[in-house]
Image 1 (cartoon, rainbow, N blue to C red):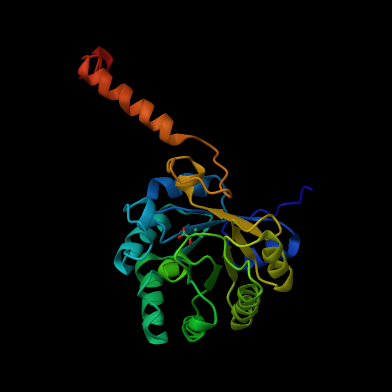
Image 2 (image 1 turned 90 degrees about the vertical axis):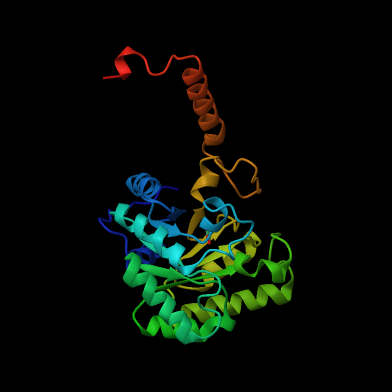
Length: 272
Ligand code: KIV
């Protein structure tokens, strides 16, 4: 079913709530640098997430845990310079908000002040409610993240689907309600059963953005390198690849090497 789309010069947290009310699905994609963010923004993606997945796809770490607050601010400030339309949401990295709510607020303020991002995202529910409350009280928009929360990967042990058991599903529903009541403007639900995600989306008034959470939610988010097929070894069931950029890039770079070796590059027209 096609939905009449309102034009937004600049997407705000209010626009996202309006999109949910109007039944317009929200598109969200990661970016970590200026050049990629420029392309993503020009393609009218509603929300650019400067995800701590930069730890994996940019820095090559196995988990999202090692990335620092300074590194997140560096990535976010590059993205903010490129984003003319999208709302820029920045992950607060592991170790920068879990100790106490004052540390959480200090980290959120540094992100807002030093990167120019428009909102922050944090992982977890009831355990971090004091931090969420304090950040919101300072006037900083907060997005929640429930389900598979990669900053807790060593607690889970694996990246498999979360909340399949009743007890975990119940806690997730309660956490989503709590984040809504605190004043969060949206929640990412990662890798949970589609039926549960739909139920959560229908039970709250704020947008629910899914990744591996089915089609019954208010929007979708992917890591841009996965969508473009640059991370060719990562093949989760939820991922739709729109390109095989890994092959395209490898082919182009191999051709360049051949051209240099064979003295074909540069030719007469490519020199001064
Ligand atoms: O860091 C990230 O890219 C994320 C998305 C997977 C939602 O949190």
